Image (cartoon, rainbow, N blue to C red; front, side, top):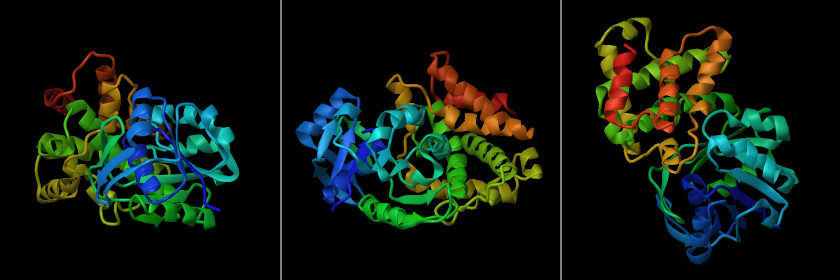
Length: 347
C-alpha cells in the first residue's frame, strides 16, 4: 500500500515539492488557503521547472480547508511560512496517522515548537538546500539545485525517516543526519544573513552579495549566530558538506579592520558560494509583498532571544530584525540604500 502525503502550503517550496512528488506517482494532496492557487492547480495542475526537469502534475486532491482532507496521512509536509506553522500544525493534527510524521520545511528552529504538540519522536526536520519561486499561481521554478537534509530531534534515523527520504528523492538528493540541530543552526546562520538582508535590500542574492558592505553585514550576522550556537552547545555542521561557518565567522581582529588577507578570502568565498544561488529571492520579502507578517522573529529574532539568555551581544541581528519590522509597518522601504544606512548605523 502506498503512503499518503499531505503538503500544507502551496507557495514556492510546497508547490515544487508537491509537483515533483505527484509527477513521481506519489499519492499527494495539497492544501492551500489561497483561492487563486487552488483554482489554478485544479485547472492546470502543478507546473514546475527545475533541475529535475519540467513537469505538469495533478495531485490526488486540491484542498482549501483541512476538513476536506481524506486523512489519515503518513507524512504531513508543512511548507507554510514560519509565522503560520504552529496554527497550520494545530489544524491538521487530527490528519496525521498514528505512526505518521510531521515534517518541517521551514527555516528557523520550528521543530522544537512542533515537538511540544506532537512529541519529539513524531517530528522530522527537512532542511531545504535549494531555492524556488512561484511565478504565478500554480507555476513554480526551482531556482537552484539541491535537495534535503533529514533528521530527527530525538536522535538517529529510523525506517520511517529513510522511507521519507526515498519519497523526497523525487524533488532532490536527500542526506540523513543524526545532528539535526547542527544542520539547522548552520542554515539559520545563512538565512539570518541572506533572507533578512535580501528583504531589507529588496534584491536577489546575486546583486545583493555583489556589494562589499552587504557581504560585511552578512559576515557579522553569521559571526553572531555562530557565537550563540556555541553557547547553546550546538555542534555546527558544514553547509553542503563544505562551508565551515566557524571558519567564516570573523575573529576579533577581523571585526576591527576594514581589510586583511583573511577577510579577502572570506569575501571571495561568499561570492563563490552564492554564485549558484544568484537568482534566489527572499521568501520573507515575497511574504511582505503579499501582506503577510515577516518570518524575521523566527530567524534573527530567535538568535536575539537566545543570545539574551546567555548574555551575549548580537547588535547586528537585533538591528536587522528591527529594520525588517519597520519595513513591514511601512516605515521604511526595501532598497540598497536602506541596507547601506543599516551598515553605516552599525559601524
